[in-house]
Image (tube, rainbow over the protein chains, first blue to last red):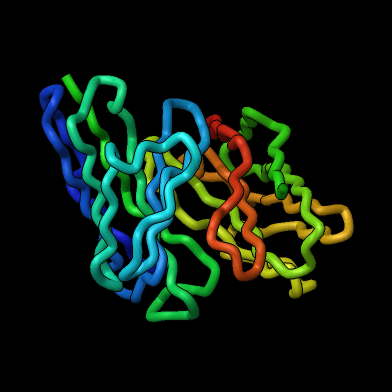
Amino acid sequence: GAVVSQHPSWVICKSGTSVKIECRSLDFQATTMFWYRQFPKQSLMLMATSNEGSKATYEQGVEKDKFLINHASLTLSTLTVTSAHPEDSSFYICSARGRRASGRAQPETQYFGPGTRLLVL
Amino acid sequence: AQTVTQSQPEMSVQEAETVTLSCTYDTSESDYYLFWYKQPPSRQMILVIRQEAYKQQNATENRFSVNFQKAAKSFSLKISDSQLGDAAMYFCAYIRQGAQKLVFGQGTRLTINP
């Protein structure tokens, strides 16, 4: 199946610093990328949807100035957690989807990165 | 709004046996896709199987197969010859044709007993 990478896999940072997480589609063109947050033993919570070359669409309750998303190319999206605080500690997962069958990606299908564990001290 | 329900928070099965995970969904759409994702302890979300609603034939991927009942809005996952590596959280998901957002169920935690 299609492969999505995410980097870094682990981040530990001090309160007040900013953290950038990268999400890359390795073998297909991702016209849409998604950022999720997952709390322990819960399902995924969608934070935002980003389409290549346009501004991200944030879900209700997600602070867009806090979680900056950039989708500059068909293979890369970044999530920057600005001025991180302990309550931002969580597991962040990205996913990517092509508009149509692209490379090894099937249409209407999201392929997920391995996730990033963020711990803010 | 579309919803996905997984009524079994936890399931367990003996190694080498067969287990079925339930999923029901609510939609008024006729064109959509259904998925099962597996999330092992590593927390990587892995696509297990994908079903297009317009296809009557049930999707299969090796030991994994689905029972797709469109009229009943049911999409169960059968795992045959269960292996220790199948232990994970399984999420059922739905997406309407042309939509962007996946709708996830609450998940079912599957334990494999050796």
